[in-house]
Length: 463
Image 1 (cartoon, rainbow, N blue to C red):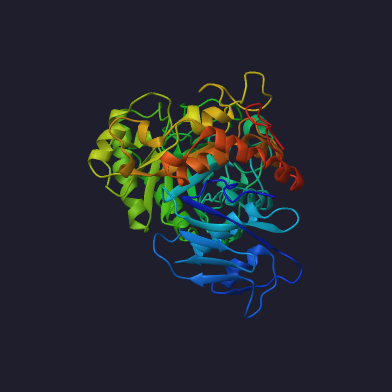
Image 2 (spheres, rainbow, N blue to C red):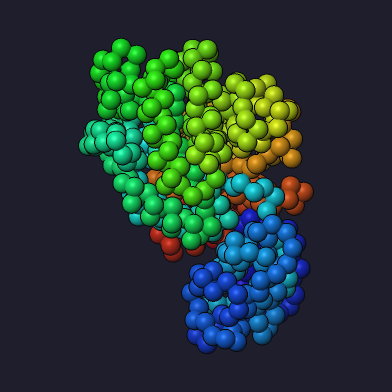
């Protein structure tokens, strides 16, 4: 039988008791938040043994659970908190239906706890993305960042620009030409709705002004000389750029931002901004000065990779730090001016880094990232000038140059994403590697039974 603290992320307060509640064929759920309670997979009745109660203090994702021999009571101020409690109960539930007794009181450390999935370098279908969402919400991840466009492919339908997907989402796109596909607007809406039902906010990324070869391959009018460019299926970066001095560029960008913003109910729109080596510093400033206001015009808050912080930002803009350097003056300057930061250092959070030098998947430019390395760091210590109160949250990132299947995605995600999830949720003082490795070791059997691929890290004693 599981212990009351056998949960990832570790809850804020755990007070065990000797009670044991057993879920049987006669167990029923009742009370508030019926749509959330349904995720337990139990029938409902007016007076159930598992009760959901609207109430309590704290942010929307906070909750408490009380488990006695006779009943389970979940109290939460909002449906998001009730859903977080359901994830805790699902983790505590043994194969024979038993739940350990006691009291749990819980709330997140950071509001934003995300994972990025690159569907541009290799496309993943709607059903594959849904499956991924189901796997990540178990660990209270609440943002899914979709990298929709890059040099090797364009994966979102934009009215008025049909060749973006007809050409750059077609067969032969993706790294090595083996990752074709795109989302129609209805496909994208389906993903967004599925995520929202599970309290996950989709963050779409349209990478610019660099990483745009797929757009320029589809529309040569977006190039500096109007001449066609070669389709690229290699993994190189830094060679493409939109033209900062062309009004065609801004017509295109505004059409894309308007459409993606309209399709996305969440508050964020990611505009990339990274690795723009083919864009001069002056042109980068010119481009961002035109594009950042567009994001706000269509009701969204801009996120960009931390290179964006080299220009003056609106205080609503969020730089996302991704490099391995020990400091970044531009990000610190943006924080001093009022910006919040998402922390995603590649040497800790990039899920496409190899676990070991000989691992068959992944890259190693930021080093190898075994599970203990993914866990043993803290975002509040990562950059000088970026203290905890300036952090919106943390995000793991999974780039897909070497990925070819959902199993590849799962293998690179698990067990490292649970480590990042705990960093984003659990109070810093409560985190402990020996505790985490014990708890994640118990999860291997669940991944196997759920047909979810994972890396059996040698740092863990797996059940």
